[in-house]
Length: 225
Image (cartoon, rainbow, N blue to C red; front, side, top):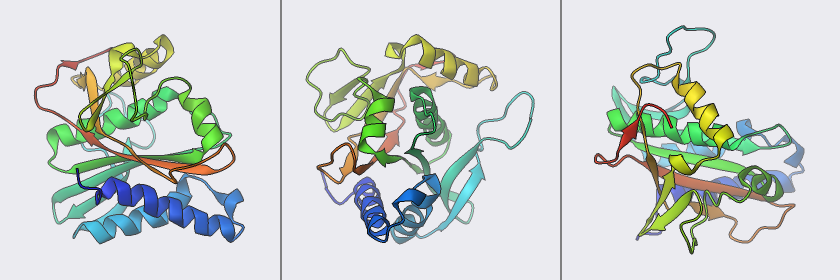
């Protein structure tokens, strides 16, 4: 497997940018908005199209439209062609659930199921906070030894079995799905092995995790989990 992947660039480049900001004593400002500069510039360096932020998701149309429609954090468009899409999450003291993370992954999978483009998910935050949110799920663990978790590594991919999610997370996803009749989601989400930076981190340091979301054609799809 090539180590020169876009997800590696996103992880290492974003982490390096945040480290620079941290040494400029701007660590207290870290938020999801802080990811815009490094992510946008890395995407611009990898794709010929234009990077745009907060673009309406083209395949999520609710029954009743209230407020702003679902949007993607970043997309790269070359004319009418979609080249890439990115969803980001930054974990702080503000509550963030496993369901919100899974829903972002599902939103990306729904996009690439219909649209030929790359899709990436980035999550960042202080290591301690990431551990608190992910708990014992091993969601982005690339060294799994067994299959008792919701994820399982096979080759260069991580398989996330939505049927193994806890009840609260399933209820969250099913509530989201109820707003979009006709939408189906994969029983198993496929991700390329995540890239993490920095490689060694302790509780009081931050971490960036980046992975590419995949959508195999033969995967079983469900209208609820």
